[in-house]
Image 1 (cartoon, rainbow, N blue to C red):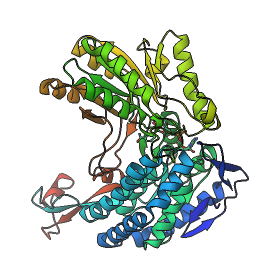
Image 2 (cartoon, rainbow, N blue to C red):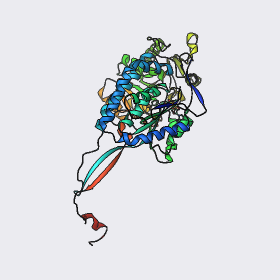
Image 3 (cartoon, rainbow, N blue to C red):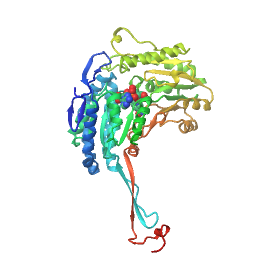
Image 4 (cartoon, rainbow, N blue to C red):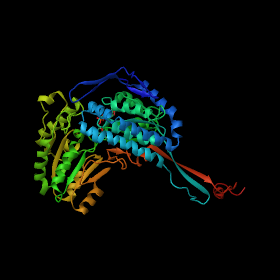
Length: 493
Ligand code: NAD
């Protein structure tokens, strides 16, 4: 497999380092390839630079048309995308088919429309002597890095608003999940996008990733991944003051007040915690349940987690597939083991399964109680199918606990009392707060973090704030040689 797609053509990597794409459901090698390195990054940035003038000056309707055709093209190839996404990530076919791929197509359709709605504010004569115009202009070449949990969708979230606004892009997928991003680059060309507008370099984070983030011809970096790497990206961007957009980790609280619909909250906790085998930055990870409902919630959610079907992602009856890799399986098991040693109780799951599942990176749906708020399992991102449940007494305490981590990406609150939900949505520090649900997203609404979950928005027209810069044009309307304000500088001459 070629690691790169540059100026409309596939190119082999020349980094000298090879890697594998492994199907985590069975350990089989799907692809072996030489990673892209600094030479490919340089070529891709050059191609994006060359394509910028034509793409940025195209009429919005032309960019819109390409994105609309991209959506159609992806729609026609849905099953190929579904199969490739499931093979490289191990996510259940049901999730790829009903969430990842249709969500990505809908994102493309949304930005096809949004591309025609980019505008500055209306003109006016604020001082009576000048007409002001606000222009929204693209930034230039955008270097984007995506993670492995939703490879196609994250690539789309980065690429679409940037391209719709007239930027050109170099995308680096996670080196373990490059396949659907490379398919996307081909489909951009098939949809009529000029060569060089979207380029892909699949390579190692510290090599291709750092080369891209620090490339002097890249004007903006947008990154989705862990908070630790996000900090590094920010450092790299300082050298030439690149614009930075960071979508980082999360540790979403799930606050259940004592008047909540218990059945809905239990169902919601399972769906919210287990989507994508818990490898979701917005996944419900900390359920805080008000004391009167606590015991019943723990019992019912533990029963439900024990019934979750774990297995082959290709089987339609599978609820959760494997984690992304053996490494991630060890990482998740390590978190649960350390929590146990710290005195927490495991109410469901908590053991790497054997038997037929031993050949994949499986980890079961796990419920943990009796953990301290300050403990690692409550504070750090596990990125696996693990829900911690903790009790609280007063509403004040529940909301304070919800806010007590460095993250602020997403949260939910569960109650039938409108005033409680109004207070919760106001006080929870997160970029998204769901009320009586957890997870649903739409292309029209922004996604992005507070606190150490990053800054900047994906999806929605808010993402144009990131991928455009505002220019004020001020035009004299007096036609006078000696303008009134000149007397401030020099007296009448
Ligand atoms: P990661 O930070 O390890 O890797 C993300 C990407 O960064 C990969 O492409 C990787 O190759 C690259 N990378 C690694 N080191 C790098 C370096 N030194 N310089 C440049 N690039 C480098 O994250 P991951 O394990 O792939 O993904 C999981 C993380 O992503 C979780 O923390 C999750 O919360 C986060 N995430 C956030 C969002 C969001 O919207 N906020 C969405 C999805 C995932």
